[in-house]
Image 1 (cartoon, protein in one colour):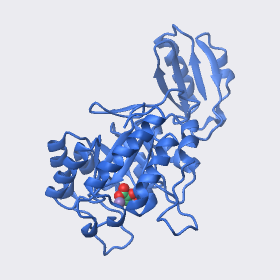
Image 2 (cartoon, helix red, strand yellow):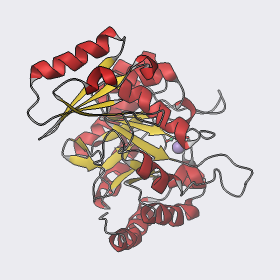
Image 3 (tube, rainbow, N blue to C red):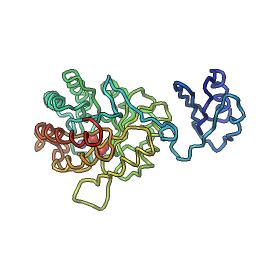
Image 4 (tube, rainbow, N blue to C red):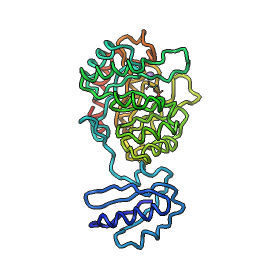
Length: 337
Ligand code: PEP
Ligand code: MN
C-alpha cells in the first residue's frame, strides 16, 4: 500500500502514519519528494485497511499495489532510478559499460585489461575474486588477493569496480574493496545473502537466475530493497532453455518487460548469455535496442589461457571495435555509449 500525503504535510503527519503502520506490525518506507511525501507500507498488508489512513486530513490518497513486489515496482516510483557510483551513473540516457575479465587472475593482467577497457570507454571494471564454479576442482578465484588486484586496477584507471559476493561470511571483506557488489545468477535466490546486501549502502548488481522468471527476479530485488538498500541494478544474463547452440538463451524481452514493471536500471550481460565471443556483439546490439541501461562484457588479453570463461571473452582490441559499432546502435535509440 502506498499512502500519499498532501503537499504541506508535517513531520507530525508522517509520524502518525508511521505509528499506525507500526501498531499493525508493518514498517514505513518514507520517500520525501519536492512536493509530496509518499509512504510505502512494508510488511504483510492483509491486516491493513485503507480506511485507517483515508480518514486522516494529511492523506491525499491511498493506493493498493497489486504486484507482489512493491518498493521496486513502477507503481511505487514512476521515475527511473539512477545510481551514482563516484560520479558515474547507472540508469539514465548514458549506457553504463562494465568490462573486464571473468576472474581476476593476477595484478598485471587486471591492470592491463583495466587500462585497455577504460581507453575504449568502459565506465566500470569487473572481475571475480570469488568464483561460483560448477566443478569444485576448477579455479575458484584468488579471494582477497584478487580483491587487492581489483583495487589496484581501480587506482590506476579511476574506474569503480564490481565483483561477486557468494557468501555472507565474506561480506565485510568484499564490501571493503568493491564499489559495486555482484550477486551471481546461482545466488539470485539465496535469500540470506540478499538480506545481508540489503543492509549495505552500496550498489548491488543482481543477476537473473538461469531458471528464474522475471517476477522471481523482481521478488529477489524486493528482498534487497526491503532491507533499505535501493541501489539495485538488475542484469539479464541468459536463461536456460532446450537450446544448446548458445550457452544460455538471451531473453531480450526481459528489457522492455522489466522497464515497464520496475524503476530499477536493467543491464545486459551478453557474454554469459552467448558463451561465445562472436555472439557478444549481436546480443549486445539487441539489448541496447530493447532498452538496456548498461552492458557487462567479459574481456581477456589471452582468452585461450583464461582460467574461466575464455571462449566468451573478447580481446581488448576486439572489444574496442565492438564498442565503436555499438555506439551507433545506442545513438539510433537516443542513448549514448
Ligand atoms: C560472472 O559474471 O562471471 C558470472 C559468474 O556470472 P553469472 O552469475 O551470470 O553466471
Ligand atoms: Mn564469467
